[in-house]
Length: 222
DNA sequence: CCCTAGATGCAT
DNA sequence: TGCATCTAGGGG
Image (cartoon, rainbow, N blue to C red; front, side):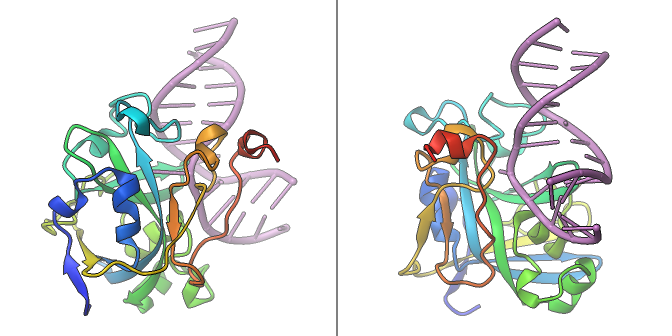
């Protein structure tokens, strides 16, 4: 944990595209009844909401305004927006930006640095350690956060939510090398270089594979 | 209402 | 490549 500091609301107050790269190399620690797992964050994506001016984001769950599903994205920074993907996977976002403005940073991948034994039990399909949290659904499984019960859990105070506690740590000094590119699996213009809001640690083996979203390849011209 | 597509993972 | 399986949105 050397070189890491607990995340504060202030550190997460800027818009997602600005905060996202600062999460790389940080850690998310989650404790539940079945154990504690810590992941070192290696890949993230920024998602903005409606009404953020030049940063309007057609790929965001909050693009249409506040709904029951995306309510957490509009709230206080530092909470975790946990949503259900394809009816199966629970994916984890760090809420950021000012309260009242939607913003989230999807944790796409990480390296399990603590509690690998617990993570292996939760993800029996993972043969290699690097696959434990490689991909957003896998990461959610590995740390034990589930939709809908853990949606809104506070990663700044570490307060209990449905039997789980989460804590986010950020690097005191930013990484010197960060890679940027289009977001994964996002359709239309939002999935192209017009929104280069995917950030990852170059060369890290836990970074997930890139794939085009439906219609994104055509939108990108290739 | 009914249909579709989705910030996906995994077996085939 | 297809499936699992839930949901928000858009169209009839």
